[in-house]
Each structure stands twice: as structure tokens, then as C-alpha cells.
Length: 452
Ligand SMILES: Cc1ncc(COP(=O)(O)O)c(C=O)c1O
Image 1 (cartoon, rainbow, N blue to C red):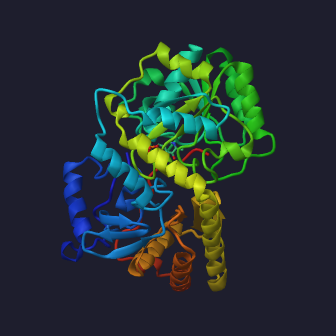
Image 2 (tube, rainbow, N blue to C red; image 1 turned 180 degrees about the vertical axis):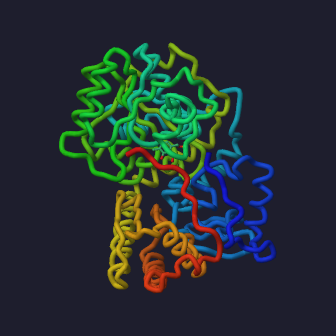
């Protein structure tokens, strides 16, 4: 379990705490873990100082509960808001839908319109099912694959949500070994009977996938992976995965929950030239409104009828309406090109600012899912200090940046000026050996590690 330390000598005194931090103290008594998403826990950014809650979010501006205004140069709704917060076009479409009723005994016609649009963007696919969250949609995809193949095992690489099928990978030989594979994702509550059903391989390691397929040849229902995340695919890697899936009869599922709508209008696999049997979208497809889609070839998708996959709230209207408006604007305005341009500016800016003050950093991630890290033994304290310094200058910032269409070149210039100052202070702190002393609260606590 990810536990929080409340005993740090650096703890911020209650009277100095912001309204958000005080509300969060209450939340931790009322809501197990305090938030609904690990990546939104303030401890993973800046314990006891992060604003935690927002009153308003518009464009890239976020107003906290004390009326402070920040520019979001961090996660933009954990990657959901590709167009920016409260996009007027999407919100306008949603408001019109609300006026016409968003739930009914009959179905929302936008479901069909969206299915057509998604299949038009991904010409290899013919059928679509919907859900509201990424993890839920992945569970649907895996269920369809298992129903289709009448097999049980899933070979996977990367992170895919909170469901039993996935957390089963963290069931060790016994309790003591539980959780070793994906640190931070505890499998308590996942039936031990699922042990050995989720089989991990690393990205670009076709040998590992081949071994899984050889050992479990007649029982691999699905191969599940993000087509690309941090690393680029080695030449032939994705094609070999595709071939292996075909040879063994496993369903190839591309998880595009985070990569979708970042590098192009649709899945990144469109750029990589390899088509899966199923692709799963959520997050960016509806600019923050709850919506997810499982898109696939009809032979596989028809197997959804051989099992039971059904939920009342999957039929509401806001999600499909928001997705249609988001995708249409995304395509019309060439949003992906903007995200790539802005992301590259930030990556180059991080590098330049670091070089200028003699800090060693590394960069990774796609331009539209950018990340940097400090090459330093005290990396976590340095990153915490970075968030602290940036917050003082009016930016929500961390070691990741997910650009949106609402980020403008002037915002980036302003942000990079603040980054230069922050990196200078960090370089001084490193030279003086007093990084920890400069922190006004405890260091950040990282949530979990992906298997990539
Ligand atoms: C690749 C990937 N798959 C699945 C998920 C889970 O999606 P959700 O948080 O919407 O359940 C995420 C979320 O970060 C993700 O990045």
C-alpha cells in the first residue's frame, strides 16, 4: 500500500495551511486515500503545499479555494484536457445536450454518430462499445478478447488501470511476494485464483513476448500494450507483435487511453502503421467529460454479445456529445500539431535552462507527454523543490508536462523564464548541499512505477 508519512519534521503547521490542504485533511478522514486517483494525490507533487482543490479551471488557468490563480504547466487534468479546461465549443455542445435531456428510456443517437466518426478515423475498425473510464474500458476489451478466444491469459506491457485482470500480475507466489512486479499497485482483494493470468513483458522485448506465447500458446487471449509511450518502437517490434498475435490467435489490444489524441486525431498507432484488433480510448477523447471507447474489428467485437457487458450510465448523452465536439475541433484545428510544437518547446527549454546552470537532467516521453528528471542522487527532493519554487511563481508544475491546445507560445515563454530561475536556485541548493533545508514541507511521494 502507498502510505503517507505525517510525521515529517518539515510538516507545515495547521495555521499556515491553505484552504485546500485543510480540506484535504478532512478528505483523508472521509475518503480512503483522500482522492479518487493516485496521480491526483497532492503528496505526489508537493506534500502539504499543493493547492489540492480547484474552484475554477479555464484554458490553462486554475483558481484554488483561496482565490490564487495558477497556470497549469503540469498534467492538465491528468492528460484529459487536450483542448484546455472548459473549452467553449465542447462545453457549448454539452450545455445544449443538457437542455435536451441527457438520460432517457431511449438511447442517445450521438452514440451512433460517434461510432461512425471513430471508425472513419481508424479505417481498420468497424465496431465500437462505450464506457466512462479508461480502466473500465480496458476491462471490457479484455473480457471481449477472452470471450472471443475462449482463453484466459493476457500478455501485457505498461499500465492499464485498476481492474482485477491487470492487478493479477502483482499476485506473487505468496503474500510476501505480492506487488513486486508493479510497485505501488497492491493486489489485495484480487482473487488469488487469478495468479498467473496476467503475464508481463517489457516494451521492445519481442523475445519476452515470444517466450510467453511459446509457453502459453493455446491460452493467450490477448496481447495488451500501449503502441508507444516513453521509448520509440525498435524497427519491426510492433510488426512482430502483430504477427505473433495473428499466429497465436490472440487479440491485439492497443491501449490508447493516454497516447490517443496527443500525436494525431485518434490513436498514435495510426502514425506507427500497425493496426490492432482493438484500440481503447478515454481521457483526451472528450476533453475531460467521462467517456471511453473500445474500438475494434467486427469479428472480435461481435464477441461482446457472447458475454454480458452492460451498464446504465454508459448510455448517458454527455460523454458522446463531448467526444464528438472534442474530436471535431481536434481535427479541424490540427490540435495534435499544436501539442507537439508546444511540448517540444518545453522540452528544449528544460534542457537549455538546465545546461545554463550546470544541472544535469534527462528528457523522455513523446513531445505531447513530456517528462524530465534530475540526474542526481537527491532526485526526489530536487523535483519537490522544483514544484515548490514554481508554485511560488504561480505555476502548477512538476517533472511532467502535458500540453493542451490552450497553451500559447507566450505562456511557454513565461513558464520557461520561471523554470530558469527555479533551476538556478536548485543548482545553488545542490552546490550548498541544502536542498532538503529549502523544502517547506515533506518531499514528494511517488505513487507507482509502470512496467515499460
Ligand atoms: C495507458 C493507460 N491505461 C489505462 C489507464 C486508466 O485509465 P483511467 O484512469 O481513466 O481509468 C491510464 C490512466 O492513466 C493509462 O495511462
